[in-house]
Length: 616
Image 1 (cartoon, rainbow, N blue to C red):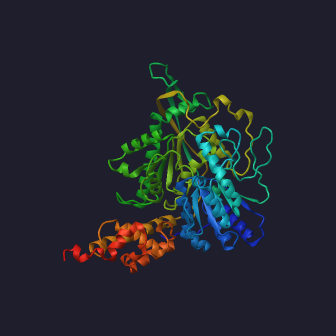
Image 2 (tube, helix red, strand yellow):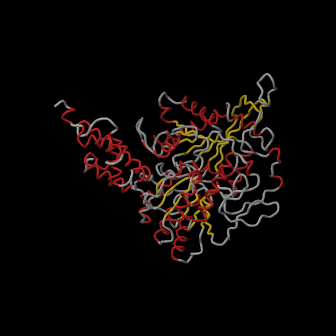
Image 3 (tube, rainbow, N blue to C red):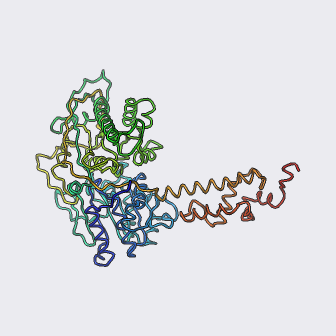
């Protein structure tokens, strides 16, 4: 099916005009661009727009895109490889997902790496930024706190890691020719300032306030209200589920302590029982009840779409709708996985439901399959997939998480609000989020509904009556010292955040990104070398044993002057073409004088004869 002509959203058009002015010299003073784009609003195209115009104008030589997680590197490659935007912009730029290796760009327009990689090898990336005029894209910049704040030594492990990222990223930001900072939120849950962004002098009793008029800074905002009006995201329907929970305090067994509860989740206001009730609910019967609502809502949606498409049983297509389950921890995630698979016929659960947590060896493969293939239809995760996951087929979210910080919840909701190009007209699509009806989630939902503003604008101060006392204030960690007993759901109500709008311009999947192509070419090259080794040993052209494939790899490296691990894509293709025309056995003289291959050199000079080996 032919994809429709692209339609840029307002923030993308604004950036295009800005970089054009920078390229022409009209906005030569701009050194940093801050793009605050609502989650799901189309951030990933912005680096492509900026790099295309600025590289063509000679303002920068390459783009370096830094992301917070390894799973996002592939999506960054796909943004540059998308044929729709290549045709629309007339660009031929490619970037590759790079590790901490020499020459990370490999002849392309740049590379994608992670905060962790930069922190592990800061000198390598800083040298690259100093050697080339660089457009540095800092994705989800809110992950980077300003380092060196008081109390850093007592920070938790996660905060310490973020501080290490910041210390490694700061010199890179200073060395870059132009910075492009991307985020769906411009506030951190811990209240710290964000690295690289300008702030006004602190005022007594107030938190950090961005200085949007700072010299050299250009700001582009795109709020959820704008995204809805431009049909860039779907409105959210919330399925709020109330329940009751009971637990034991003090971590004691049932005979040592009286039972606490049952207590309602939806108590109307935050109480001392709110956190333990939610903690219990997410690990007992309530979680199963909420999971059941989300699972069967997804099942009904997929059945309806199959009927509309008149699909025969067993036929698999894109666009039927998928379910994302966000668990509170890895143990609960495994429990949810088992529950979901129990609800499916034997064999189908293994295929249709996958787990992606940091403890799973195949987590990235599960994420990629969930994003890019019709199956699996259900993904269970903890935090790996909540931010930046580009999976437009997600239509239902089971929000079985205890975290209540607004940036986190906004990111989670955005997994369901992306428009699916395979799912038909906009009016027929849905973003359905099932969640516990606790008072803090209810407050978040009310704020989202009433504000609908850009996260660039400072939010209004809350009235004193809305401020939660310290002893009741929510923190995103588990309550200590309670033993969950039981819980159950007692009511479900739906709330639509915004009315639905009209049909959007869909976005089709991108072709194979450079890192995948490189890996495939290297595998083909290794197979071609091994094939020649097997053929030559079988035909008695060279003596058997001594790991001939290893020697042939050394020959190939010396003939071509470079090992395949450091070759660019054109070099890998040239190496394959050379192997099709030449035999490595004819170039074994390249190993002469190398003691590691002295045995093979002696054999080649005549101490081994094929005739004698064959008994002739």
